[in-house]
Image (tube, rainbow, N blue to C red; front, top):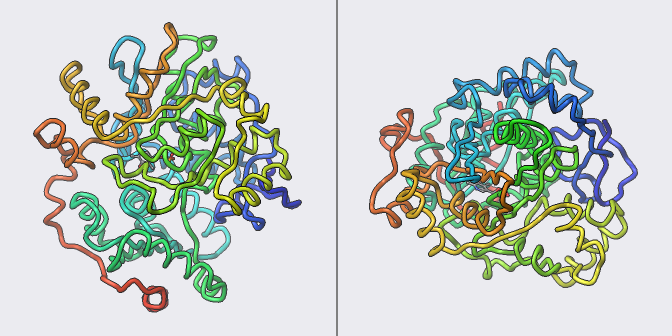
Length: 471
Ligand SMILES: *Cc1c(COP(=O)(O)O)cnc(C)c1O
């Protein structure tokens, strides 16, 4: 399998070459040259497989530069009941007639990002050992991504994590999750500033090419193809649990921010998994809902990006969206560049409303969308608790609301549960007047010793800290 850039760079790469990379050299995103097709005989064979073996089968179609026995061992080591809480790994439960929740949030940090990040940690360790190389991951987080990365990389050989976060701005639970890690290769850096300051620091350090090369700086952001690929697996696993045979369509609703999760659903659908509809659920930051309703993709300015009670979906632009648009415009890199380089670069938006391709978003590609607000979120959390005695987190609530607006009778609707409610306790208290129960392993973590340094919002200070901690 070879990978290409959405923006038309002539090079073709193998999986392990792009594993440790971010953007392609021309600023595009990597995609496989073709989507491997899965026929009904294969689906029938896969239906009975445990999650780790299913992951191996799917990954094998995209990874041909890791020996199968090694890849199999990596999958088996990653997707265990010990790490993810159940043998099913992503258990499905029916909420009401035809509406299901697929639990993706029982990994170490209680959010779906663990599904991909845990695999990435093991792939990184494997590939770095094979190359005899090292990697220093530099990131900025306001919560979910940073903690998922730290729990995936802790104790891994050849990898260090330097994670910046805005001092005092994460929830006490998220702070405790990250800062209580005592592993030597994990470095928490609290920046005196806001999340944008952290992101600016990461950009400034990465733009210092000399420093970047010398200290082997890398990232684990959501545009990484390996993360997206790992997420494809749970669409198959959800499908098999929601159906008894492989001729039945299923729809999925995905609480969305950077479009990584739902893009994995798109890939699964392109491979031939019988997905009828993919519903993109957004919060008040509705760039994606606007696109799927109108054909206009309008990136928001920082001042127009709302801080909401489903904060992991607070985005101004969706960094994986370019992958889907590439397919939408018939994989034409010139057209893609016109939209993402010329139009977005010059005017901050592009307009496909009059383009025949736009009709295909809903038609050939099965996309729908929905939007919810803080009031909707509280109402959905309350209603779900009252009628089904089930607590859901604010992001999953956004999904459930959008899902109900797009149901086709007779087609199971699977809502992806992207976090556990305890991670967003304040909103649960606002909705229900009580704190959600806390999994045992997180009892009392706020009281554990914290491993964190405080630095000013200054890239030079962060560089000096990295340099000091790199031998
Ligand atoms: C990251 C995240 C999302 C958004 O996922 P994308 O892949 O960025 O679309 C939704 N919910 C939660 C809880 C998350 O952590």
